[in-house]
Image (cartoon, rainbow, N blue to C red; front, side, top):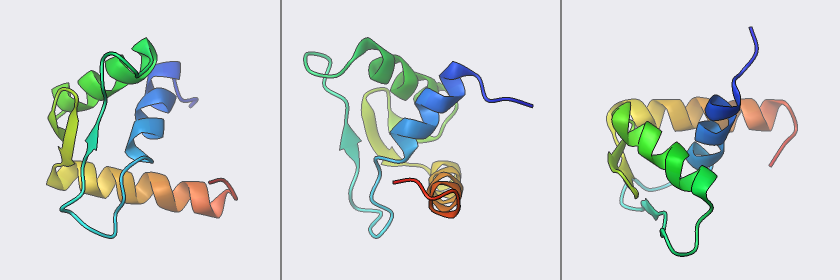
Length: 79
């Protein structure tokens, strides 16, 4: 099973979250962010992983997804 480009884009957005505090969210600004990042963030919102269509905070499920994404990235030697 391969990841789709959309899934990779969504994972990239999840990797932007600082997991050391649930009080820190992200904001994807429509005038500065790429169309790809805007669309990926909206998809995460539609999947109930973030609280706002332009980012916001991680939901409980989003927190788990971001933790897994960051762990996998660490294991594979990325960011």
